[in-house]
Each structure stands twice: as structure tokens, then as C-alpha cells.
Image (cartoon, rainbow, N blue to C red; front, side):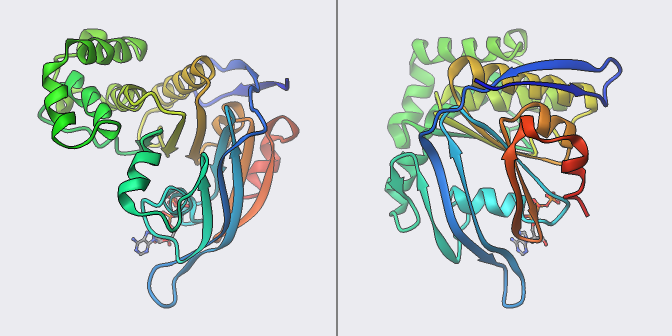
Length: 271
Ligand SMILES: Nc1ncnc2c1ncn2[C@@H]1O[C@H](COP(=O)(O)OP(=O)(O)OP(=O)(O)O)[C@@H](O)[C@H]1O
């Protein structure tokens, strides 16, 4: 197993993280020749290919507009790619019907920069919504409010992200960092095999961002969850990943193990 020692600055007291790579050789997500344009002249992804292995943490980096979010969204068919194929877990999903795709995607927890919490309901209720990905429709809704076991599980997810004492607070009264923790708890509620996080800490201050990345790291290691995240912060990308993929103008220009890379290697891929 690879050991990476990376120093992370950008917060008052730099910390050193010791990370053990737990990646296995099974592919959880495999993307091949993905192409995406928005409108006639706006080619965004030019046939990108990459894989994410089980229990691996992969950081997708690149400058503004490079195509990171589009790549993530196409890879999970949150938006439709124009061409290419995607294997998620054991299935080819590019031509799969949406009803079946939703079931396959129930094993993926999503965390976005804007955490997308429902503002007027409690943190606990937001976490409970995480279960809807798994048990959809009316059955899911009725379970949400009926099951003590589900509520206890949601409380334990909130506890795990350090927010048990904020369970009954309305989501729109939480800080940015707290909201992002609730979003992580909501993803955990799904008991996902994989978490896909698009700029999960971009809107947080450096300390809150560092804490949230640390939380991701602990949870994914502890629960054996595969992680794919985008980031602008090259130090964090290096510190919290087993592998870094850099995208530039819709093309992959680097795909390498994090413990073989330096900050200056990554910085080259900006601009
Ligand atoms: N729905 C859309 N319609 C039209 N153009 C879009 C759409 N979504 C993204 N784009 C364009 O695609 C390009 C890539 O955007 P994308 O969000 O994937 O980049 P990114 O690397 O994630 O950038 P950032 O770091 O700024 O979030 C940008 O030029 C953007 O304007």
C-alpha cells in the first residue's frame, strides 16, 4: 500500500496528513471517449477517458472552464454526453433507461459546491432525504416520516459529521461549513459505494474547507467508499487523493498517482 505524506498550507497552522492508499484494481467508474458540446461551436469535452478504482480517491483538477464539472456530470449522466461510453459499477449506463439508471446511481452520493439543501426544513430532514435515492416514490416519502430506525440512522450520520446538536436547526440557519457537512451526512445516508463531489469546499473559508476535506478523507477511508472530486486547490487535491487527473480545455493532460507528483507538477496544468 502506498503512503503519501503531503503538507497542506492555506490554513493558519499547516498540517501534515498521512494517507494510506486503499485503492483496489476493480473499476467502479470507467469513462471512454466522452464528448460533449453545448451548442454548435462549443466543444467542451474532446473524447476524454479515465477510470476510478474501488476505494480510490481521485481528484479532477483544471482551471475555470476546463470542463471538470461537465466531465463529472456526463460521467454520471446527470447531463447527456454526445458520444462515448461509461461503465458505472457493473453496468454500461450510456444507453440505459432512466428508471434503471436511477437504481444504479442510488449507490452514488453526490455533494456539490452549492450543497442544495432544502432551506426551510431541519438538518435532520435534509439528511433523511438521502434515503429517497434508494427508496424512491411514495414508499420512500412515507418511510421518511414513519420510521424511527431511519431517523436514528439519519441522527447517526449527522453525529458522524459532528452536527448531532444542530439536527433540528433549519438548513437556512446553518453556516456554509455546517451546510456542507449536512450534505455529506445526506450522501452517507444513502450508504453509497462511491461519492462524487463537485468543488465541495470551493465556497468555504480555508479552515472550514480543510475540515470538510479531512472529513471526506476519514469517512471514505473508514467506510471503504470510492471518492471522485473536483478541486481548484492543488494542495488539497494532492493531499486527499490517490490519483490526480488534470483537464485542460476538455482534454486530459495528466493522470498520475498522487505520491509521484509535486505541487509544481500540478500547478503547470493551470492556465
Ligand atoms: N449548460 C451549459 N450550457 C452552455 N455552456 C456550458 C454549460 N455548462 C457548462 N458550459 C460551458 O462549458 C465549459 C466548461 O464548464 P465546466 O463547468 O465543465 O468547467 P469547470 O472546469 O468545472 O470550470 P469551473 O472550475 O469554473 O467550475 C465552460 O466554458 C462553460 O461555460
